[in-house]
Image (tube, rainbow over all chains, first blue to last red; front, side):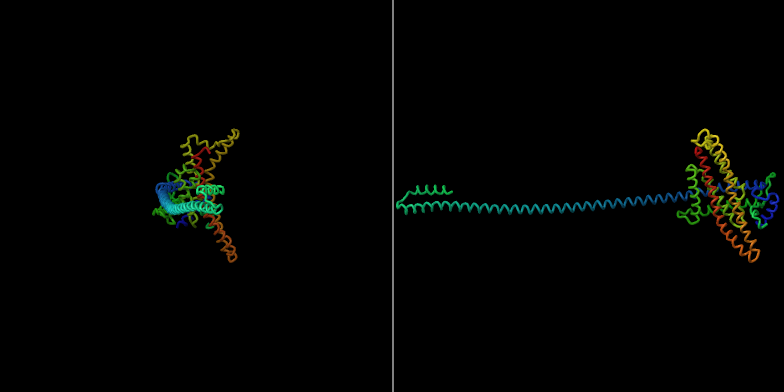
Length: 181
Length: 249
């Protein structure tokens, strides 16, 4: 119906001007209806549609920003927890090291004390033994002198056939021993 | 008559209205203006009525349109240009939907009439001039005086700038009008070849295959042009608005 109407009216217009876009008789009606329709369209867009789409996008942007913030916060929290865990682990490690070190030091100190004690005991015994040896030696040496005097006086008696005083023999033995030394 | 490629642009009165000798009839052009506004409004209104946090397919088309125009305007005229967002968005949607509706067979293409595109571009230039003088006063005239030009060349440059400014509404409107007009005529001519060759018998039917393919290809091209011209119109609007916002180049 529209098409036939267009044909009919078209024939009527075509007589006035062969090229419709330049037919100025239609301009007033086109300008009026364009102003009405575009004006309404503009109002509807600026009052209803654009604020609505704008608010949809705004809400979504806010929501995304909020979610990102939340995710960042959770990440920060987990980072902190991890750092705390690491720190505790390091502390425990250094504690363990310390304990081991103390135990080692104590054991070493014990062993040292034990060794010192044993060494002191051994040294004491050594000293005592040396003292005994010295005593036995000096006693033996003293007896050697007496034997030497007896032997000398006996030899002298045999050689010269007379007796010599004990004091002279002793002095002679002593002088001989000193000269030998 | 049916093969006349100009016939599709014929305006016919559906409801004759005459006010004091001025013809204000409701025509097929008016009908398609109403249809354009109704289709665009209904689509944008209904698809966003759910206000979904996760958009449905249709809702995301509306959102894409919004963000497409918003980023176009922000790139072209800076964030101060966002006060013109409703106007640029309305212009883009109006021209786009009008162009796309024109692609239906037997539908009238309102943007194929120069008075319509000229009025739209006058709206843009009018906004630029009114806002420019209102915001900057006579400083808006700096638009015609580029900085860093030798005084000798100044009169020439100013003359060129004024002519270029005055030719803007013409180039803006003629570009859209001529593209739609030429595209629809070409399409009609090739489609006409198909029927007239097809009427010539077996050989004609064989020969009609070529214009048939051309008509199919041109239809695709025309959909591209329909979008592209709406885009170009909106981009140029943004650039001209940028002049109103920042006249000092």
